[in-house]
Length: 376
Figure 1 (cartoon, one colour):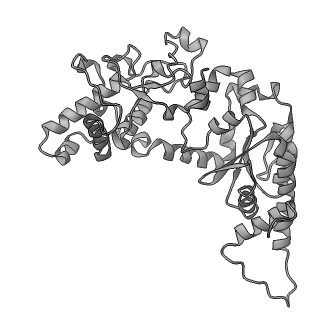
Figure 2: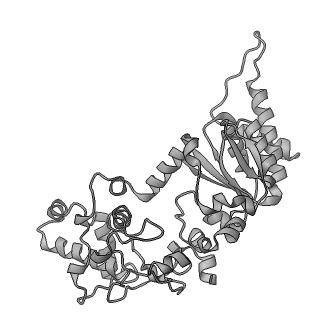
Figure 3: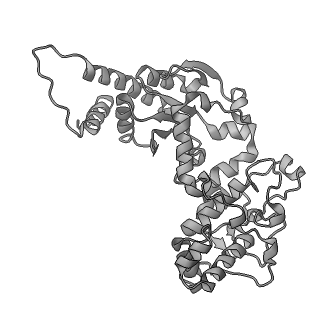
């Protein structure tokens, strides 16, 4: 793993112009459509649609996977299936097959009397945003300049109008939305969270695990180092959905070939393992729509060194191992604070109305209890 791969997320790497011809493994070659792959997703119509949607509708580049070293998953099984290991050049190189497909759309646009006429004839082609992006690259306003080739046999390149199903989820919605939707489903349906991947199945061989009865009423095994904190969260009525004391350590021991892809290929707009693996820290995912959860999360945001990433009905909290005792105490205080707030008042006493900003106010008071001297 190079310094570039370790420190620069894939999406932030410099983009080089494409080669003059698509590689033999290019997913946009007609011969490769539906090709079997150990990771299942590549080459399927859903995968192709999802990638083409991002390029054509959002206006972005697509990199050649043979130069995605440090970001693309590769294993002995993948190599045995006939796929080459990607070269690590510390940068991205644009996919020549995707460029050929973009060129086809640009030529169709120029051949039509108007952009509206083009969209009617090719509804799965470039959007206005996609057209603006590629025209900006042709003008040189956006780097690198778009390099097309006259030597590509277009009969060998997919036409996405033969692939895309207009009513499919992968065409209708962008990848971030679908990721958040999947996260929401897993949040609301605990039984669907069970994961059969190698890392989860063998997790106990790296981290000692202890049974936990969660606030949702589930019986699960969790990392022993996190057990006191997770137990306190459950006692406070805070629902947790995933956790690990050091996911980098677990993956490094069980499936090291997944480290680079998880660290470098993560979508920055979604909850993922990238940030927590780079920090080699602990993480917990928890629900955010109940009173104790909202209060605990608001208090977390006041603690230095704790990262909180929201995603619809859940958040991911990232923290250092030595912060477990502090956060455990905070969870206990949250339970007590919420209980005090909800304790029935004497009938003759008038309960004061709760102001709209109460969550942040209560969070500051909670932190003040944990840190004497802090203004409440």
